Length: 154
Ligand code: ADP
Image 1 (spheres, rainbow, N blue to C red):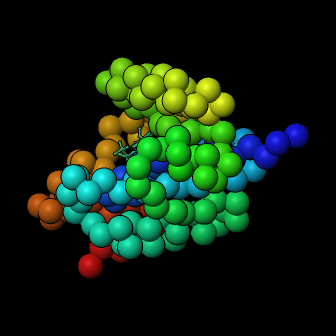
Image 2: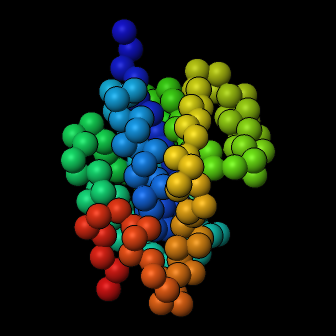
């Protein structure tokens, strides 16, 4: 059987316990998960690409079949370059659902061999987003508990 390789794309600015939960819960479904940091030159991020990658590597160091990469351009093209046939995405609420449906259907149109797999957030993590955590970090709120263990912001 073909290897089941999934790409989990996102900005991860920064990685949160919500992202970690999705990967930890689905780790057994795939032979390999590639956490793929999308580089969008139009989008300004709070943390550098190198920093985001380093935090992701630390977060998933316990999972030997999880690797971290970055990419530019279309997610389906990146999937093809990695022989991945699944895109992994988390769903928190109906806004995520509406937004993600369009992207997933577009991606299927671009490449019918790539299937998007959605995983529902754990209810207690559904309000967590990188956007909110960035606000907490910027305004010196209590952000630490939303970051995976071992992630330090200096
Ligand atoms: P993007 O900029 O593509 O939205 P993010 O880094 O914000 O990237 O999110 C990457 C993926 O992780 C998305 O599928 C998003 O829905 C999912 N995600 C983010 N936060 C959570 C959470 N708290 N629970 C479950 N999934 C989440």
